[in-house]
Image (cartoon, one colour):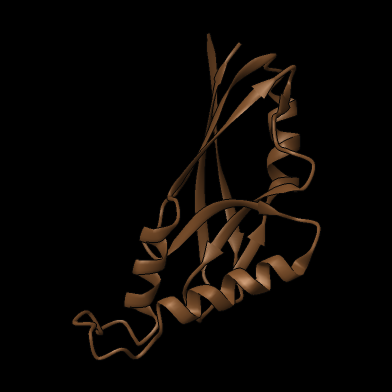
Length: 139
């Protein structure tokens, strides 16, 4: 059994989905694992990780609009407001999605489906530099 680790840095421009599959796939390939498990972990409480369709950008638009509708900014229900009107909604959106993803590696390749991509889902309005820890375990 062997393991590899890496930290992926994703610069965001504000709310949205930022695909970083193109950075992950070659790194996994370079590790020369035949089989294993890749774990990705978002080190933030106001951003998250999702595996989503990467063929039609309307999917991303609809996801963003849906989250804006179900978790609005400036709600009087929020107590935590010190970091701005987008902060508490960002925490809720992150809680509704994933901070961690697990993707099997089979035959040296990630087992993503044809239209699946790995995304950081930025929930804050302003640009951020996000960190995603990667841990690959296998043989």
